[in-house]
Every structure is written in structure tokens, then in C-alpha cells.
Amino acid sequence: MWMLAVALLHSISHVFSEELHASLYFVNASLQEVVFASTTGTLVPCPAAGIPPVTLRWYLATGEEIYDVPGIRHVHPNGTLQIFPFPPSSFNNLIHDNTYYCTAENPSGKIRSQDVHIKAVLREPYTVRVEDQKAMRGNVAVFKCIIPSSVEAYITVVSWEKDTVSLVSGKLLRFSFPAGTGRDVSG
Ligand SMILES: *[C@@H]1O[C@H](CO)[C@@H](O)[C@H](O)[C@H]1NC(C)=O
Ligand SMILES: *[C@@H]1O[C@H](CO)[C@@H](O)[C@H](O)[C@H]1NC(C)=O
Image (tube, rainbow, N blue to C red; front, side, top):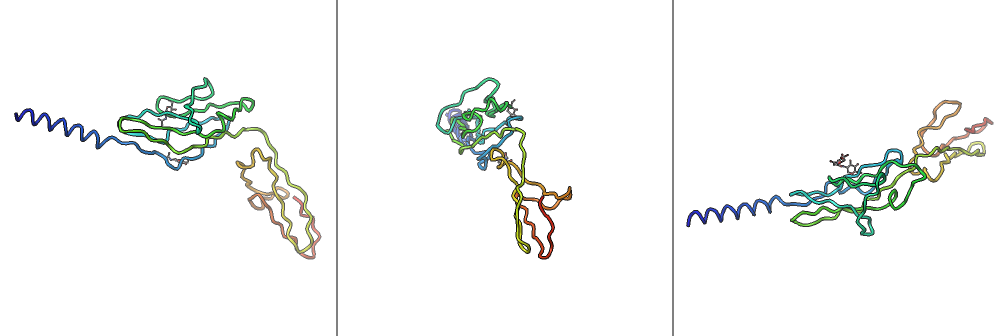
């Protein structure tokens, strides 16, 4: 009788402690966007996890479970989604600019990460330019650094130079044009 009671207690506490330790949680709830260069590719760990070990799956925001595309996209057994480097001619927006999410599932349940936008930036040569501006004496001339729109979001203007002398940083250069001088300030 005692033996049975002890054995019963033991199994109850065993189940109880397993339940206590079972959990599902988010590793990185702030992960909403991954921007990567086409020349490097990217590895995106599933932002959800749990105990006991979870099954991790990636989906497109449309709900389709994603499939491996050899040499292009792969989900590792540890739940990390890999997008391989690719040449600009192989850009495919379904893979290289799409919204994904990941789920983590174990006997205690299932959770879904929030949507993660995974977006490749093509590494292509680009040039920036600046247009001439006219300003009245005593006024301010504003020069804008003109960047091709395909790369604009990822470019930081680090400096403006005049005759190789660095002036300021930022996309706009405000040049005050002192009254009484007739200097050419283009540049
Ligand atoms: C969480 O995601 C943000 C945004 O991508 C990233 O900067 C940060 O390093 C991540 N933190 C962890 C712990 O992975
Ligand atoms: C998952 O596995 C891949 C491939 O082995 C590895 O590159 C990556 O660092 C691993 N990620 C984590 C979070 O362990």
C-alpha cells in the first residue's frame, strides 16, 4: 500500500514538474525586419523557441509553408532560415523580398512569431550626383545629394566636400551665401 502511494506520488510529481518546465516563448519579439545584401545572403534564426524541444517551421505571411529551394533558400534543422547569396539576375521577390513568420510547436502548444519582412538589397554599382543651385546673395542655397531610388533607403551620406575639404554630413547641404560676396559656391 505504501509502495503504491509512493509510486503514485512520484509519478504525479514527475508529470507536474514536466508541466512546470514546459514552455513556449519568443526569443526576439523585436525582430520585424531583416535587410541583407544580395552578395552575402542571410541567416535568420526563428524568433520563437520552447522547452521541451520545439519543432520550428517557417511560413510565408500568406500561410504557405515554405519549401527548400536548393542553393537559394533553406531551413536548417535548428530552425534557422537561410537565404543564400545571389546575383541580381536571380532576384525573386517571393524569396528575396517577402514577409515570413515562424512557428514553434511542442506538446505544450504552438506559438507564432510576428511577421518578419526579409528583404535583399541588390549590391549594384551606383552613383550619386548633385545639381547646380542658384541663390540670391544673403540667402541660403540648399544642395541635395541625389541618390538612385533603388538604393536610397540604404545609403547614408557621410560628407560633402568642396575642393576635397570635408564640410558636413547629411543628404542636404545648406550653404549660406554671405551678402556682398559673389563667390561661386557650387559643389
Ligand atoms: C533582435 O532583433 C533585432 C532586430 O533585428 C537585432 O538587432 C537584435 O540583435 C536581436 N536580438 C537578439 C537577442 O537576437
Ligand atoms: C543553425 O544552423 C546553421 C547551419 O548549421 C548555422 O549556420 C546557424 O548558426 C545555426 N543557428 C543557431 C541559432 O544555432
